[in-house]
Image (cartoon, rainbow, N blue to C red; front, side, top):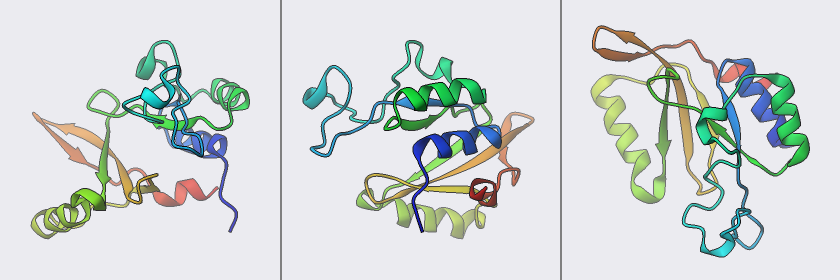
Length: 149
């Protein structure tokens, strides 16, 4: 199976309502594409845009322009309470898979979610949330199937 382009992934996330923005990429030698290059403390994990996460959008034309200009840009998703999106970063190097197992044993399995592989050999699970009083509840409104189109 051929791996989908980063632009295709960005457009798929936007299609299901996840605002995206381009992030710097990492070269074959592990160097960040930002001006700090080999001295960057967060290679490939910070925005390329002037206003960072505030530039995130679901606008197809804007996304097409960003990834046409730089097809190697990593895909960032605006997350948090304001966006109504929660991400679990499951990094097995730091025990993330065991933590997720404990969480699911205590609270039950996560609802259907979008799962993406990470550069470090782990994955992220992305879910929508909604407010219920003073708490945020994970909903099942996003589906991994949405990214197969």
